[in-house]
Amino acid sequence: MPKMTFVEPNGTRHEVEAPEGLSVLEIAHRNKINLEGACEGSLACSTCHVVIDAAWFDRLPAAADDEEDMLDLAFGLTQTSRLACQLIMTPQLDGLVAHLPAATRNMGVDK
Ligand code: FES
Image (cartoon, rainbow, N blue to C red):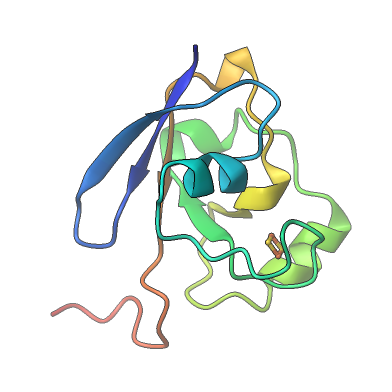
């Protein structure tokens, strides 16, 4: 079974089982990870925004235009941001690391 890791804004890591064919959003919800996903994966929100670990970003399939458009609305957009509902787990993504953005406009302001 592939695994992936979610990293909370405070640095807490959760390694979880990541069944092939499920989206990263579905995997988060199965494991009670605090990732919203208000539109349930229909690309009508940006609340499933995650920041992919830089080492993994290039291994992901490129984002479709619709995903890019929605990402533009996400808070705290980064170079390696993606929408979790659009990332489908495959064996190649075993070990994927996704950071949960702090969902506020203050993201990026150091404490
Ligand atoms: Fe709404 Fe991903 S859950 S775009």
